[in-house]
View (cartoon, rainbow, N blue to C red):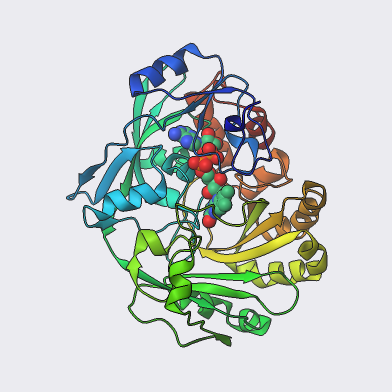
Length: 407
Ligand SMILES: Cc1cc2nc3c(=O)[nH]c(=O)nc-3n(C[C@H](O)[C@H](O)[C@H](O)COP(=O)(O)OP(=O)(O)OC[C@H]3O[C@@H](n4cnc5c(N)ncnc54)[C@H](O)[C@@H]3O)c2cc1C
């Protein structure tokens, strides 16, 4: 099969051909005429969540056409727009969205359909920014969803239809400065986890579970950065070194939030490139227990790992959200591209974390399936009812969703 039909990590090959409709009308016709169909974003998920045996539709040839509503404090845009491109478009209007994940390469549609998030005590998953969706249903009809129904419909993994346009909350454009920090003793996290994450707009910590934490990124909405950070030194880089770094976003100087909140530049390959990922969202109240449990298997994890990123995400009320009802510590694993070493670790990790209330990121590799996951999500049955009403024939179903959602 052609490269174009694989995901970004190349750990899976999609089962169907990809169609790129040039207009919403063409998309509606394609959906109406297909037996099975699923929306595809920029293919950065590690699980077959976007797959289908029928027809894959990518909306990247439909004009994103940004419409700003200053009175409402929102902007509406085509779902295929990449986050980095949305950042620039909004910046031209003096606007921004509050939060971004580590990479700007992914589509807004894929971002909000999954639990995509960045870091920040006051920042929820990006789906919390959504104020309305326009969705093509199984009969090709186009429907606008807003208000209460959004809480069930926004993070739907493509299971309710194909989202064509998304309205997000905006705020005035703002600058962010990011400062890298060096090694941090575990005692800082053990004794001051809340203060560490509260110390800046966005804080990410990196560890390989053995020895000290490796370091982190502190992102502030102020012109000056920290001078010391909980026992870690703030790295001051040579401007020549900063200019030469084509992969990572700029450090040490304030700049537009859309360019500093992501760790990676849109023009470069993000992260390691040869990798798999998993991530678990642990209620903050259980964070220390979770970290201790993982450190207990630190050498086994380290053998298959590039790096773990620890982030903080605010609670929300979205039905399938892994951050519903609790502020969380997000524990993300960037694994080496060694499925035979990684996959056996996942049930071992989940045995330790799920009893603490942890929920996996469904766009990244995990082991649990619907019987276990249902217990972690209080609004599970409400989502099932919404799905039965929106797509009774499961036109937007796929084998992954059948295993995870149970039908
Ligand atoms: C290098 C790397 C770094 C990452 N960093 C982060 C991070 O910092 N934080 C984080 O949370 N995640 C991160 N991820 C995971 C990523 O955010 C998710 O995989 C996200 O879903 C990718 O969006 P996409 O556009 O590639 O979606 P795809 O992978 O193409 O699709 C994902 C899901 O979204 C649905 N979808 C896409 N478009 C639509 C639409 N128009 N209508 C309805 N459903 C739609 C698909 O059907 C599918 O269910 C990272 C992934 C990689 C590869």
